[in-house]
Length: 310
Ligand code: HSE
Image 1 (cartoon, protein in one colour):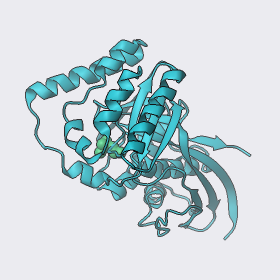
Image 2: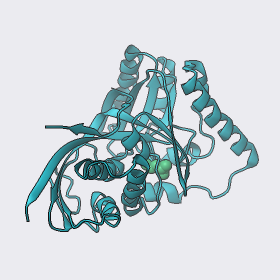
Image 3: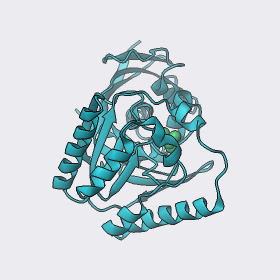
């Protein structure tokens, strides 16, 4: 087997749902990100190596990056394979798109090595196979922002219809309480039917959030960061959730909520100082609850997967 070419990529964490947009909105952040090195080889097949302590499977059938690469390889007519080394910095199960980063990073790197033969939509389609393996369902609200960067609207996944939204400068504070919430569990507790009055409120908020982002109207963004469908059910899985939200708003956050399916909580702020104050409030809540936690203060990543060209 001979090595043909190699690329290293940084695949960013992502915040899915953006409070009111369950499965349809998401954005990428600059911290944290996974580091992945992919080598194109002249022999078909996928080999995976992990350079972290998460003990994720190296069998490509059981690894989300492997599942995504397999989907891509099914559409190749040339006999090539991939050797992938993953250094995860996004903890699996944290709610900031860990599986999406692995899946999206792998196929974006593969496409780079193959001379960009696939579109970004194709890459989302391939990477959703990783999400299916991780949570049992194909959803693109982490994958799409990871690949496209910025804030994305997934109007439909079958067929794929992804819209990149412009957004004003926003600071993002994320707290990851070190408890495990599996996406499949967080999805299984959701009600399958909603009341019309709640649906009306929710789509009013989604439209308000999209308009607020496009018009750079921070007040409208803040007012629209409300979720009457999912958060009331899921937030009971996250200790300190209500307190974090309430204290963050008191110090000036525009709003926020559960990141993806949790347990991470994110808050958006207009200014860095406010984002720092939000972090202090998050710190105080989890210290008083004696829950180990990790906090990121970051910004929206507008580029998606980053290629470290030698
Ligand atoms: N939209 C998905 C969910 C994102 O909330 O279940 C999972 O990261």
